[in-house]
Image (tube, rainbow, N blue to C red; front, top):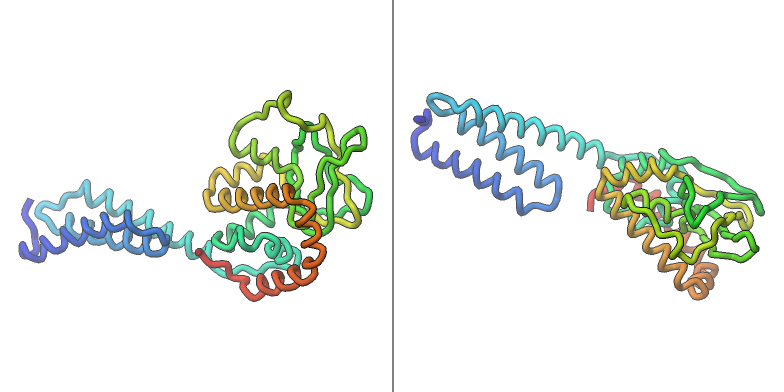
Length: 266
């Protein structure tokens, strides 16, 4: 194999192409990572092509790498492009703004719009849970949902920003089955609306498939669920604090979400 270029230029091209390939391991930001990987693939194609005879096997694989990086950059541009959210979506985002602030806007929009908005009147059933699980997971956007067992015992309350049926989602994502005999949960619980309630509902299996395919969304949902469990553990204090600050926080958060409708990668 003999280079077409002078040996100095050939050496520089070889080292630049291999050095930038190595540098991709040190980037976290996806834009920088894809840009450097694209540059590396381009220089490697030039290096192997400018040999006599050309090393076609390496040219082929580096052209393939170039195409893959180009597709990833296009997808990244689409995911981070501006999205218009309606008022209901802004309200839902405002409740979990800190959990999803690093997720691209397009991903958030796809998840929100894959769910179903439900309006439940006071005293009506939002859902029924068997052994703490159901076929759907609900995110409470307005109002309070109370889980009541068959004997009339109140199991828990999900306030605004809380989840109902999240255990089903956790098990569906992990692919595990709970030990129902060891769990201290009622066999069946009826989730009732206290006042008018608005929820966003997803089928558990569909949402679990989406989360398993996307690490960013999975981490964001895990953080939101963890916060919900934390709030329930501190229920008396949080309930008092929420009642005092609910109106102010809701107005502030929705305004912040509206002013930042373009959600960028963190």
